[in-house]
Length: 603
Image (cartoon, rainbow, N blue to C red; front, top):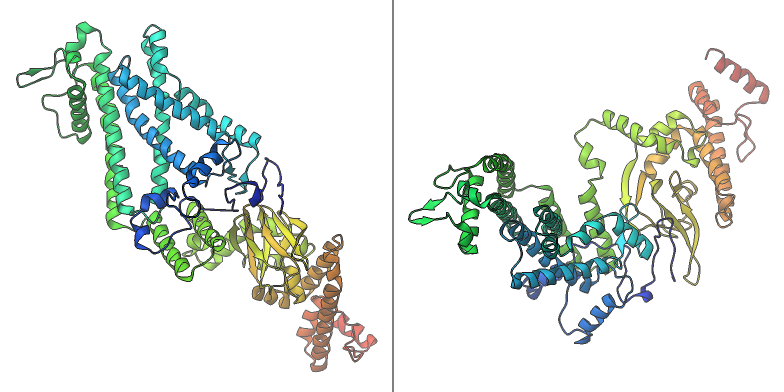
């Protein structure tokens, strides 16, 4: 297909020929589809995690050049592009450096040395390049799960999110501080760069879900990073509190009053940077561990206040670290269960050599289930059936009452439908029903958009209609016992309610009158569509067949004198004047009037 434009928000699909990057409907960033059970793959987890392939392959030495050209030529870049992934890893390393260096610069330097100043400028240039590149990177819409390629939408999304903070973080605050007369207030703006730590946090979240990297190793590294970062930041703040006092009062600080053996810190500014930092780090670690103070302790009021705040924070941090370590030992966390399940699925797909498309759909569904925990089975499995029925009526009844298929049906019938529904989510690009297949499920749309597609004899696709909330599909095949007349494909992230065929038919056997109403609604609702109008004869035939079956049941009940069954059939909508294929009716017309009067007289 050349391209299909979606609804609002600038959402669109692109054909594979418009970019060297393969654009799939959905791909899980955390899992590379190229995983194989080979020794070489197990020894290259980082390369696989980044999605990079520096081997010769078919591209040879031109692979790197083509990848760089794809990023730099000004076109929209797919976020799964391997060279863009390499760039994000490069920026993540700079973000890690900036996260640790910013507190150090804030606390220990008032004017960077020349060698560190050059390094700082190089880092800010890299972040500026990343800001420009972000305006050309497609993103996946959080509501529809479609890839968005329109530049205006990409730019607007970035401008409304972190653009201002990213831009301010790239400002040369050291130069501005000196140009402003070394005003201390200006240096506080340097702390905007701490926002970059969120890149490191996202990187750890990604590593935790990657089954090719040991989970225990990832968690321990993350906990060590959290502990080091908190103590490093506290050490820089402790030193900053000492340096912001007037020179005459620096002796009344934790470091200015410090004396270890014959070594005095009275003129601590003249001591080398490494010694000052190590002393500050030691003070921060001892305070965090709360093992008691020896020669190093808070001296003035500002230091005491910060020490109290820091120790209060450390109690929460300590609980976090201990709780995570306990979870690693005990196991059974949600992320670990997800990894174990994904590992089993990966081994199954590798063993059976499943294709790339089906791999993406499987991993996408598992990832969606992990992130949203949407299945009601997991949440309600321990709740009694009667309460689950009430929950289903509360959640699903407003949707089912609006479905045109059930217009005019009784409330009892609709309630029986509601309590047998199951909720499911589908990602864009997934095919729920194929043309010509046997259907055993009836679906109702709660959220999202689907496409009804007719496949012609030459294999081309024709979009018949769009299914939106309150629509249903699969009812024609189930009610008329015919193959699925068209393919149903997901266009946006969809929340669907599913009812299996057996449950539906069991309900229809009891509620005859509602079954006839459904067939009439089905016939009326499809008249406006030229393609679906071809099914009118099948629906009409099925209505006639059902009426004939009701007539046979009515004749049988009248023959055996089963007044209760006769009354039930007539209440359900059976026509007492309807004859069977031999022209027989339940009773002569005069007797039928007398019988009906008797049946309903004492109602």
